[in-house]
Image (cartoon, helix red, strand yellow):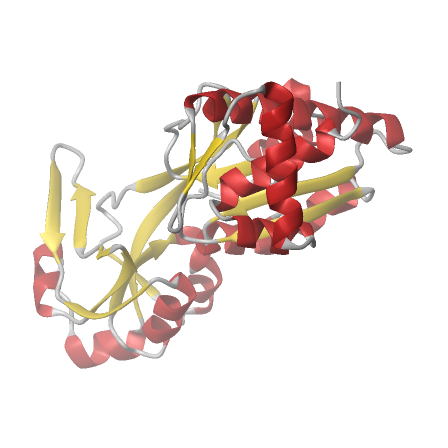
Length: 297
């Protein structure tokens, strides 16, 4: 076995995850020729072509797909083993989390500081993006998503929490525009909608006996819930947000909850990670902590 095999596997995984030799070299802090040389050396070790390279893309061969799946598994196991061996505290090392900016806001406001106080030797890295990053990945320990679909059989999903949606507007907006007791009136109001690939202007709700929806008139849309909340507080319109995002504004009276007798649904957040939680003490600790925290409705 080549003594540099671990390094070669790490280079290979980064190239696969970035789909680019150039991007991989930037992440690894080496020159592009060094990345090409490492991949060639790994292919020579296994006697098979692992990557099909063109001027526009890097694609996995059949052997490459098998190699990547096994390499990620082995690199994770090695990383966890080293973390356990080096640990002076029960849990130590780095935990890398990816989530949407909205979930990142919830974590940063309600949980991350308390989690680090419990595990001071554990370093956290939070990657926030509305795009779904592919797993498994040697760079990501755990992904927090609203979907429990798994792109690889080596992954595991656990439900963490439910986040309730509410409809809100400022007292100033309501004083100027009024509001009836029926959600159907939202078609006549300025609505502030979230956008990700498309504008989410169909607001589903339930009156307890049947499921309904209203197509709102989108006066403004953004891929940032923070922006939508700010505009809503300033009287810019009506918005559908998560209850945890506007809890303090509701308590202070800056925003009012509309149509509270209706159920506006909720988002279920799942933890997606490689292997089983007991394979990694830090992942197990994070999942247990977030499931036991009382910060989401």
